[in-house]
Image (cartoon, rainbow, N blue to C red; front, side, top):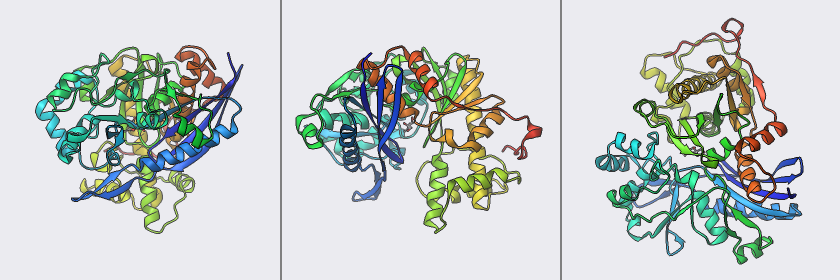
Length: 488
Ligand code: LRH
């Protein structure tokens, strides 16, 4: 076992960060070196203003963070990149063609129809094992054909692969993120027959790269500009952020479910092989690939997006919202409200979230939340209810005897959410670590460089020792402060 540091570039939907982990015998320290906002931009495209990621801005901030990591480390061995799934950049002869679309851009309805005309939803599910999300890469690419860009593009790179390419000049498609495109078969190969059927080039995405393999070293000009050693390895991690997060959950997958709760709440279990049945299709459960070839059998629940978009609206309205205070007030609310369907596609796009939530209630003749704290309360209560339902379904569909639930990511710091989830499930919730994604990122690259060793369970026990989770025990209904909320 060697000593040294590895850096993680972790791009999330609301912010990005660069973290450094210091490894040595019995040592694992994680520190944040840089954090920057991820502010998507609306750009007029001749017809409408479309939502894009500011990738050059994110890359600029991430590489400045990496330069800072280099200054703080005495032996920076490697860097790994992870981000949200499904989105991609188109390239021609190595140059990016326009800014990548944000998956929340409302352009995919036509793509969904175009794909389903060729392949019905059930056929598609049998091929790729993915839940239906209207923004999965395959639908985005089908929608992209209308833009004309597909006629000139000669390759596509997923977001972390794009950053890796800018750092090293090497192209590849990392496996865990490839598994979110809808274009990978459940046997792990590109579905070239499907690509051709959809009129897309069979070799649009470069070959699959496994997590834990070296992508390359920094391009000399990149290293020199950032003041970094040219020998630093750019290492493939489990580049889908959720795959990195799940890799670092201190759980026993045979008896635990997990909720990776950030912008999205990814709720499920980890399995040795996919579950692709009529029931799992109906329940809209996905089989994404995890670190070490494990399967993340999970369902996307809307997540903290509902809260962050609500707070953004309050600020636009001139109300200085403090999440901590609002959550404290929300915990005291005793008025019963129905829970709303967090899966409703009406909550996907950015915009006036509290307004949409209120209309969800009024359209059904239900009492709608009125105050800021009431809105926060119904969001947290509805998320807890959706989490509990998804945990039960994951357990049932996969035949896992779930005895406890791990919550990681930003949601693990939301005490009300953790407690209400435990209450609704009647199971303990183990909260933390909050930085599971960055931890999963650095653990996979540290292992590749001999800074740690062990299988996935070995890596998880390091996390458990170093970041012991906080326990929330389910409260009997009688002892709860708040009433049982009527369900819709
Ligand atoms: C979470 C996440 C999730 C995907 C979504 C696009 O950040 O990667 O796993 O479904 O973003």
